[in-house]
Image 1: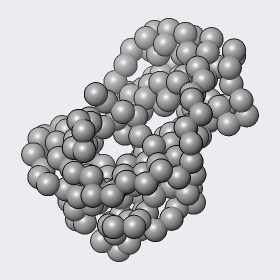
Image 2: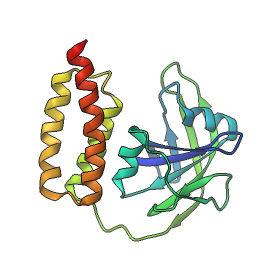
Image 3: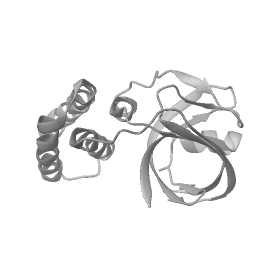
Image 4: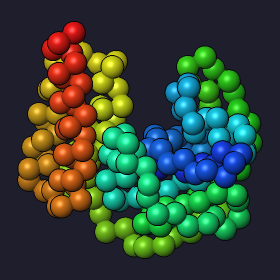
Length: 188
């Protein structure tokens, strides 16, 4: 199974990095597969730790892709690192092994500590739409423009029907990036 989460890591200097990522899960085992190059991969190689944040505030997913990475953090309990202050739950990981690859290495991890901070009250369609739009934004340079337009048109339906203020703000951030990209595509 793949879960869309926020992964927090630290570099050797102790600077945190926050990144949305789809991770593979099976019981207490996780596989993180970041694309090269990226700070998440560099940090995991340097520190051999990472933290998974289960978060329902989709502004963080959208924010990380639009240059908004300054989210409040708290100190991890069993590893060196931080988890998101607003996370519903977090899982601290130790790295068991890394299988290198030219495009997407596989980082095999094990849970060493988990905590639930707030109850999960369910997702609405707008939250799903923002997460899917964030994935699209991360791949704008890889997809044909027509596919991007079609996907966003479909996702917009859920946004218009169910969005709260957080979802509207996150959607707007993403649409600004899409519009900037569109202008570059049309002019290119």
